Length: 132
Image (cartoon, rainbow, N blue to C red):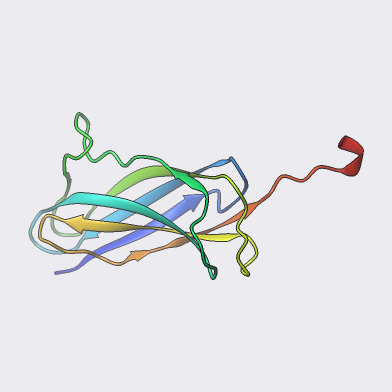
C-alpha cells in the first residue's frame, strides 16, 4: 500500500497579511480506492521555536458538507486539496523569516502518510523614514 502526500505553496515568498495558496496533493498508488477522511493543516517556524501568528483557511472535503470524503481511486489516482494561510507577523526564528507549511492527513484505510512540507519566506512591511 502506498499513499503519499505533498504540499506546494504560491507564492513561496511574501509580505505579512498576504494570502498564500496551498495545494495538498494526496496520491494513491494501491489497487483499491481510498478516501481522504481528515486533513489538518499545520504551520510551524522553520528552525525556530514558538507558534507562528497565522490564520489557516478551512479544508473542505466535500461539495455540501465540510467533512465528506474525497475519493482518491486506485491505480495512481490523486486529489488536490486547496487551503490558504495568511501570516500576521514575520518569523522571529533564527532561520530569518521561514515557515514550514504541512498537514496531517488520514485516509479511510487508516493510513497517515507523511506530508512533504513547503517553506514560505515571510517579510515584514517596512516604511522609509521619510514616510513616517
